[in-house]
Amino acid sequence: MSLRFHEIIEEGIRIINPFTAEKLARVGEIVQPAATTNILDLCCGEGEMLSQWAKTYGLHGTGIDLSHVFSASARKRAAELGVSDQITIIQGDAAQYRDLLPDPDQSFDIVSCIGATWIGDGLVGTLELMRPALKESPNSLILIGEPFWNMEPTADVLKAVNFPPELYLTLPATLQRIRDAGYNLLSMVMADKNSWDHYKTAGWINGFRWLAANPTAPDAAELRDWLETDQMRYMTIDRDYFGWGVFILSPTD
Ligand SMILES: C[S@@+](CC[C@H](N)C(=O)[O-])C[C@H]1O[C@@H](n2cnc3c(N)ncnc32)[C@H](O)[C@@H]1O
Image 1 (cartoon, protein in one colour):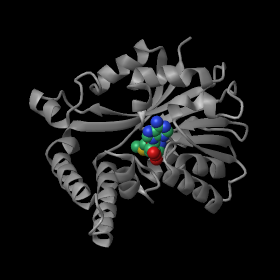
Image 2: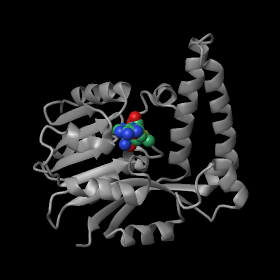
Image 3: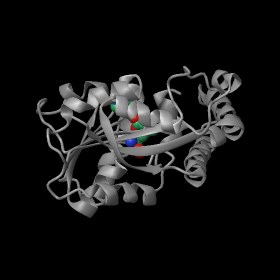
Image 4: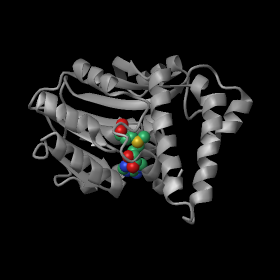
């Protein structure tokens, strides 16, 4: 899906993932950031995690997102929660985060990428990309949000979703992939069917409302087609086949 469609469908969805505010808060309870914690959130979206944790724990953070629309929403959200002085939002390509940070050698207590591992061509590449920004400390953490297969996909399912077979794995195979990449899985918080439904349906209603308000837009037909295809695919495949979780990791070395 194009960035423009993402922006139409996901604008105003504070957590752009199959996750709820409660589940995000649960990750915070596990991580227990301190007021001195500094976090780098790659592909921060509308910055809900950064702003909520700045408010709850007093931490400081930097978020990077490609979208002007989401970056503006993230700044607005930080202001709404009264944490603008603790949060910096940078618009740009998170794969190039070193070039975007004011100090390219800055390191962070937590480096996160919640639901955007395409920036490193998959889970392993994204972990490699994130690692140089992680402070050398036994308490440093990587947070990564990633889909997994609830059951082995059939050949027909793989064809329908059009993903390379090795892009996502089952949960145990994802664990092995994390270990092979050099990380301990300390904890995890999982999406469930309700949080998946919540996320998907929030996007559909945004999309159909946009179509109603912009019936003659040049890409209206394309968006309608995308929405209808997405709804059918979600109900026939994704809802049963896909899990998603935030994995809380520490380096093994
Ligand atoms: C699935 S959303 C997740 C957003 C956020 N982490 C959250 O949990 O709400 C993916 C985000 O990645 C952003 N994005 C996509 N490609 C990017 C890139 N190369 N660099 C930075 N952000 C990117 C999108 O604009 C979108 O906000």
